[in-house]
Each structure stands twice: as C-alpha cells, then as structure tokens.
Amino acid sequence: MSAGQVPVPPGSEPGPGPGQAWWRLELLALPELEESLLWKLQALGIHRVALEHTPRNPDQRQLLAWLPAVDWPEPERRELEVALAALSEPFGLTLPAISWQQQGDEDWSLSWKQHWQADPVGERLLVLPAWLECPAEWADRLAIRIDPGNAFGTGSHPTTRLCLEALERWADGPGAELTRPVRVADLGCGSGILALAALKRLSVNDAPGAAAAARRTPAAQVFAVDSDPLAVRATWANAACNGVVVPGAPQAPEAPGTTPGAPLEPGGQAASLQVAQGSVEGLAELLAGEPADLLLCNILAPVIEALAPAFATVLAPGGVGLLSGLLVSQVPGLTQALAAAGWRAELVAQQSQWGLLEIRSARTVA
Image (cartoon, rainbow, N blue to C red; front, side, top):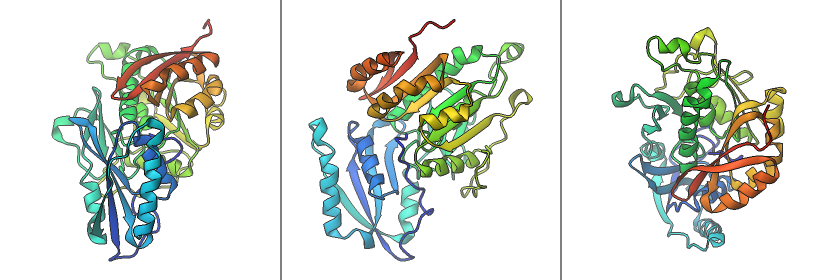
C-alpha cells in the first residue's frame, strides 16, 4: 500500500560495493504498527524491506529489512531501535524485540527473494513476484506481476488485500453493468498493484458462451497518482512487468525471468493506464473533468480525512469509493469526517485490525 512512501527496488539505488556486509533486521510486525514501521524505515532511507508471511497465515508476519553494515554501526542501530520503539507508544503497545543478523553481499538478494511466493487473492487474482513462473494450480487466475522490493503494495498487507477483494466484488456488481469503458482513479498508487489489478480485472469478459455478448466488453481506463516520485517509478516498472505501456514512462528493463503479459485488448479496445506524480489535484487533472466510476484509496486514515473534501473532483456522483489503510478503531471518526464532506460511508470488510470503507455521495443523484 502507499501513503506517498514507496521503497526503492533493490539494485536501483547506490549501495555498498561487492563484498560488503549487510545487517538483516528481524521484527514481529504487530498489525497496529506495521504501517508506521514501514513508513519510518522508508523515511530513514531504508528501502530494502520485506514482510514474511504465507497465504495460509497472513496475520503472522515478520518484518525484514536489510541495512548496509558500513552505514549502520552499533550506535546507529541502537538509535534506530529507539526510533522504532517510539512508534508503539500511541497504541499503548510494546515493540517486540528486534533481532540483528549479519550476512554477506553475495547472498542478501537471494535471501530477500526467498520470502516471496505466488499469492492468490480473492476469486480471480494472483499476485506474482516478477521473477517467478505462474504455478500451474493458479494458471486460470489473472496474474499481477509485482517486484516485491516495493513493500507498499505487494498484496500481502491486509489493507491491500481488502482493496483487491472489494475491487473484484465491484467488478462483478456495479462494474459489470457499465456499457462504456470503466474509469478508475487510484489515489496513492504506491507500487501500482491496485491500478494494475483494476486494469486487468475490469478489462476481461468472463461470461461463457452466449452470455458473453451481454456482458460489458469495453476496456478499463485507469488513472493513478502518488505524491512520491519513487512510487511513480515503481508503478511504471511494474506496469512494464505486466506488458502495460504507460504514456510518458521510460522503457524500463524487464525483471529477470519475466515474460510480459499480453496487451489488454478486450473487445478490440486497448485498456489504458495513466500515471502521474501528485495528490488529489493531480488526479483531477488526469481525469480531465470526467470523474471516475470507482475510486481506490489505500492510504492512512488521517490522509483520507484531509483529502475527503476533494473526493468530489475525482469520483462521479453515482460512483463508489473504496477506502482502506485504516484501523477499525478509526472508522467512527473517519465516517463522521466523510459525512461532513458529503459522503455516506459504510464498513464493508475487515481483516484483523484493518477495515475497508465503501463511500457514496450523500447527495441525490439524478
């Protein structure tokens, strides 16, 4: 997920030379603290981060981070521990013990990749690390290739999964009723996973036989922004991994072992993805006066509250907004703030401590 902070994929930034050592930080990621921990590590320039989990036990998560040993001697590591511990105070929690392991430069990237695997989400989607082949057992799913070097938006975090699952439900409900191209706005796109999922899921026709003719076939039009230029770069790179061409994006090299997906051309129309740096104002510019049918917003609750008054510029009066990145305990206050901005909000899904709000305009739609 994204809150305007997206780690850089390993290898895309300067680092220690060959033979240098690394410190691997290991920490049990409590659900209440996970977002704050990821944000803090990113803010401190620690971009090589992973969340270890298995699809069958998504709530048991280990936070892993790799730090160049030359830049992080013991005094700096202790200061880091103090800074991370302070994040738990607002929640009345105690940060679990941090473990430090040292490893050589030659195997850190390999060990990093070993923490990721193909991850089925919902009924039709599959989050697939860019370098892996699609497992035969999930060959019928829509694979979204993601470089999991971007910890925000890998599909493993509950808030991202909630958004992906809600996107599928919308695609089979209101989205299936549209006879024109679906317009989707992704505010805070992070790694681009939600934008790419929308592009693929809303640009397919699953209906068999004669029913296919009655189903919507126009391709989706997806518009995505993030305030962090690193997020824009990450979305460009992940789009390339999926065979999606983004206007204005540099031709990024493919990830090792990646086979780009086929161009999305249902009904003879090409699906489209536009990505830009910015916040809600930039998203409104991308939409060019035609607000979206669906708004995806997976960012922190305080940011959602601050942006809510401007949602009307990016979400059509009859549209639906899916808001994640929030704790269930934050729902009452956020619902009140959204109501003041003219939106009806309903908690429609939750996983562990995290929730997803569905919003619609409180004004009468003609």
